[in-house]
Image (cartoon, rainbow over all chains, first blue to last red; front, side, top):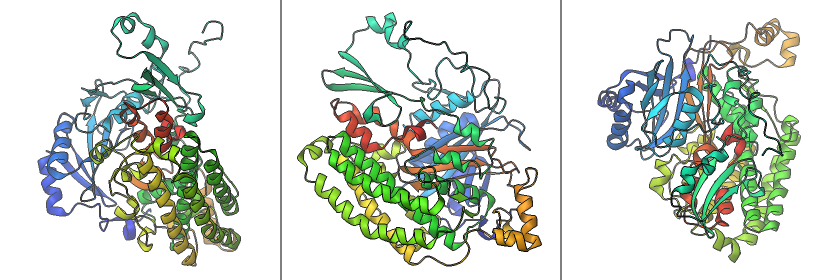
Length: 180
Length: 408
């Protein structure tokens, strides 16, 4: 129904990685399930290899900018086998290429190694993912909540968290002028 | 995350030897933060030893809301992210949705979206530079910058009826076509603005106070800019020649002749110059777009089944009537693929990206926004270390932190 055939495959995009190189990258990062959607290339990497994969991509293939780290909670998503999908968007600023690296982590202890030693940009991005999804980044220098107050007990972007909240905000202690 | 007083008042903090003398709380309510953000500064005399940004005061769960509002409703929330240039956010959001759906909008819509996105860029840069002048003591400059912004608001009002929170775009098109009056207003604006920019330049470029307060302040090298994920004017002022309008041309940017403004110094003054130059380039783009505006519809046709058809079509043809009903009924609408896509645009502040996960419905399963302010504010402690307290406002102004976008 959406039928994006005429524009969907944006293989003419300059950010597209040409084929022999892309296969080489997939092999070099130990990735699996290389896929492409609307011209965006993605590789799935096992969570324990994410640091090494990003290090290889940065040092050998020139992906020097980490644009974004985000997470998707696949609870009840059609065909999903894992709970959380971490998404790393990388850019090669010299050759203008873009690559999305994904890895999947699961309860009860969703954790991956922090990539802050590789990319300083990951610092706040990983803190945000921890804040919103409760995924632990091992080796992060300062893994505190970033947007929510530190007394907050939940990770609200998880799919089992209701839109209206569970009353955390209403139960915050009220500080009056006299007591403060 | 608000830093509670306990962090500063517990005994361990008191007993360890402190290399600094003062802890200064800057914000959350302070005229120079412009919005609600907080800095905890460690000072030694007037010199800033360290800064701890403390954000989250304006967090309103935009990404959670994005999982409950449909693609057309959510555009009103994107208005409220970077509210200095809401049109740029509208364009970014619907471009991301349309890429996910595989819909390409007609040429006239592409051109109009380029025009509004560039007007939004000018509006954003005018506010940023005006406020930067204001914070460093040049009040007149601020007034000169705000005058053309008023004209842009008038244009937006003529285009879509709203001055501030525009919500002008729709999936597969725009709210409605630009009227001849609005096009005439844009032409007049393109003719008028260079004079205002020249005035701004004359007011500030040779102003010794302004230059001494911005030159060499907040230095960011090229390597750091890349490693810390900077984009937009902040990165380009440090010599990163990256502009998504050129590197990954979206909409109709391939058709226009413009330059990417870069500088090498990487200080606050360089960021000022880059923004100033970008406004002149934006004017060139708007001029080319408005003079070559293609005729034709602004929305995709019925066969795509994403945009509500024109009222005339709805009232006179059965196909139009059916597709109108299909789109507005809550259990119908259009289908999205079960897939995910990151789409980035060059917003005034930098790379504004949306990572959208589709789940077959008209509502995003996940609507991640990659806000440039968030990335740039993480830089702040690095940029301010070693400078004086009065440089805090100059650096904040040059980064153009919009707290609503920072906290979402």
